[in-house]
Image (cartoon, rainbow, N blue to C red; front, top):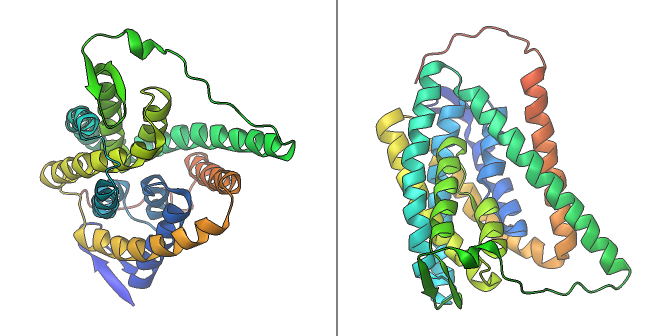
Length: 303
């Protein structure tokens, strides 16, 4: 059953889109990631224009993150003060990122820039995750326990310190704003929520406890992706609401299945599987950049 996507200007099988949303939802439930960095490249592969894929996926992430944030908020696992600092930086980064998006779109280099960003970040993250997972499995097989050591990082020496009671921290507000700003730029250009970057940053740079990291990340993602979606819709006219809705339907169903599957697998196994998946997608996008396409020229109307 074909459905016409008015902004993307192509016809796609409705069950394919719901299925893609479901697959990424399952992966999100299994691995605890937002799924934007997985879904957007998949939309490239089925022929969705990069500009539409990025903007529409940001809208889908907004809906998916909202329900997760509510659940964490009820459990009091959200640091609101830290979240608002991340939102401040994220909104500023989104505004800046959308302008970069528009400039490269006008230059006709948008698709290249988006794919290069994905190759860079998927490659780095995939390699780090893969080797860390192998290291964890190696230690576990030899029954070696890793001890966590607390140390004072460079963040402790920065000015404008604030007390974050939910995270039990007294640190500078500057790193949180800069982390949010960087993630806001990536959200605008790559169509991601930024969870796979902001979660490690909050743990390793800011020193936040793990129990409040996920909820605070989702809280920040809601506002940043909301601003990103609005700016893309108003300035670039590239949000396809039909596409976003179908992906969201599949994602919500798939996430419930993924959570049940994830319970049966060990953490180290989950991480190494996700690393292999990320590196596979990175390799696929890299090959597309270097291999000559079957149709060198194509006629498309600028959106």
